[in-house]
Length: 143
Image (cartoon, rainbow, N blue to C red):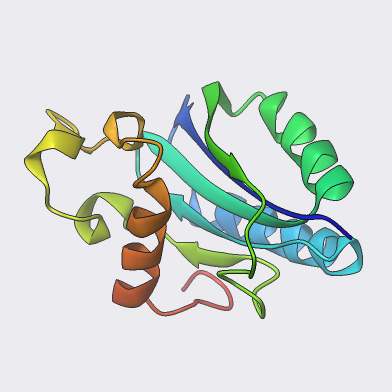
């Protein structure tokens, strides 16, 4: 199995409600386990930032499905690599709902709305994801 890590950002057309996020996480976790996909999803009112890890074919299929989801636009791959290990070996889908508050405070990655994942250099986006994970604990379901 060729392991890949894909990190993408998108602009949410509308903020997701708690029930919508719960459904999204529940569906993701159920689908990702059998596909050997792990990852982390960060949301704010305006952006999604997600890291997917797993077999190349499975990650590519999932990304193509995500890219066509009508809840967001400007779905953009920020990084695609073949890592030597997973960042999230035990998480079918970790979650953070406070992207703007938890993201690194570097001014160069912020705009008028707060943290903007599109502004992060591609070679630093993995560090940003790791920093988010260090600041936030995995949430099994949204409160």
